[in-house]
Amino acid sequence: MSEVQTDYRKYLDPRTLARISSLDLRARLIVEGLMTGMHRSPYQGASVEFAQHRPYVAGDDIRHVDWKVLGKTDRVYLKQYIEETNLHLICVVDASESMGYGTVGSSDGGSGAAWTKYDHATAIAASLSYMAIQQQDSVGLAVFDREMKKYLKPSNSPAQWKTITHELTLVPRLAKTGTGHVLDQLAEKLTHRSLIVILSDFFDDLAGIQQGLRHLRYKKHEMMVFQVLDPMEIEFPFEDVTLFKGLEQSGELLTEPRALREGYLEQLRQFTDELKKMCRGMHVDFTRMNSGEALDVSLSNFLAARSASMK
Image (cartoon, rainbow, N blue to C red):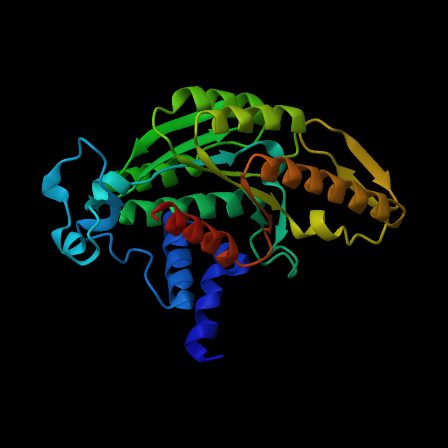
């Protein structure tokens, strides 16, 4: 691997990002690192007017007919323009108390800044928003805990990204989660078919989540679900007697963690499998994310979905 290829990875590493306090700078570095690694720009073609072809439908304006294609194929196609293909992206970010958990970057003698699940989620939301606005797409934001704390209507104004990053740095993480209720609220607010990216640990009632996702699917929205978990939650590597402090009013437990590890990991596996199965049953893209790993997987998945939606 070349030095350039190796170097870009640091911009996707949570340990590096945790040292940067500015969310907008984090997002810019993430996008730059991702694009360097992919050796291409996600904005290619966004600055030109023409986007793609689509078949002629009775009533269409014939001024947009591509006569060259007609001459070669004897079929009538229209040139479809950027304004006809613009995406409405909605980033939905869980700001409940459990999302404040983080261990990455804090294990080097206390010198590193902790990187929480909320940090991971907001870095992704800010990065996706930045890329979308660069492509002249509209971006909105919903931030929630037990209820919707903030909602920004979709806009493609350059100022929208700054507003989004500002709001993501203000929301406290003090309450329990009410995912299903919030998704129902969102379904009623949105007036355009959108691509909805939900970033959460989903430590909530699965029946309520399912109802909210179904409501959004009924309204014809596309969805991507990112379950964000900390490495400690995924691996449960604790050895010594440990005092576990429950988040979202779930109490404390002093125990021998090795006795719990097998049962905990099995419960987590079952929960994640059920969440994944539920999403796939509704044709919702699902990805489980480790907040200790680089962010290129989640962003690459988004770009792939974005590309597919333009075809």
